[in-house]
Length: 193
Length: 227
Image (cartoon, rainbow over all chains, first blue to last red; front, top):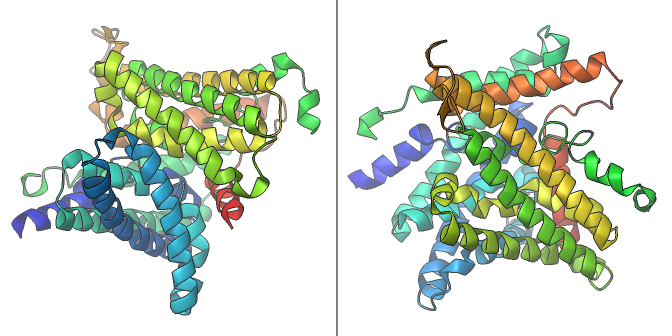
């Protein structure tokens, strides 16, 4: 139990996907302009990463490992994730229309998101058990959402400010991201992680 | 097909200056921030990505007339993933030091928007020769951008460049520059410098306000093809 809690806390705060591992920077910069879109994207990411962690774990343990095909993991994972996103989209559209309306438009953006593939690869690298893998995937995605939502608040404030010409647009966003990242850096060493 | 009338030289230099993938188009930001703690890693990542880009551009350009439009996205992804696996294995075998430093960011080349964007925008519409030049130009642009960010972070954060001490008596290195926040900061200032430069000189085409449009566009195009 203790191990699971530590994995969860580490994934949300200490090893935050966006702010300390630089996974999923594109959606972080792209959809963090408004808090509502940030929440929608975060929800979609949580949904997909949690499922993909379990699915890729099964594929790796029962398909790739016994057949000594582990070197094919990149190809297999990316295709599985692409197929999974399509499947999630179709199932959601059919059975959970309200959820689909909320998260649907973000789903297509997730296939090429390095956070999803990154979490699958990290699970393999760290040799997690199935439960640990799912907890890790879920908490990483929660950490991603937390960073996205916090940062969207910062960006909404930036919009109304007077910014030097050279820094308008992307540069000021990156500088602000650096400051948020400094804040998360304070979690380093929390509970000895 | 307006692009095919371009001159070979301009195709080559396009990726380095005018459409630098990292600094102008803001694609491939994840590796640009994650592995640029040292200039050496920047070069390693740049060359690895260039190899994948070159391979995928050649193959995709060769098969562009055979692959039906509807299945092109899965085909492109498989080709890119194949070359990424080759690079992964080559680095593992011959350059274990770099392999260890770059870690999971090598397999993550497969989701690097630059490679997919070039496959979709260039290689699937142009001849093999042009695609090779485009891959080399874009790869060089990516490598140069990583080298610039990596050099700034290494000099300010560790006081060395390519492992050689350079600022020994000048100032104490600010460790924050080689930590995650320094990545955002260095990237932000480099883009700001370029923005300043291009505003002063030629009225270049406007720099997009973040990679949202490009990446989202590339991912959306990705999905659109699947349906």
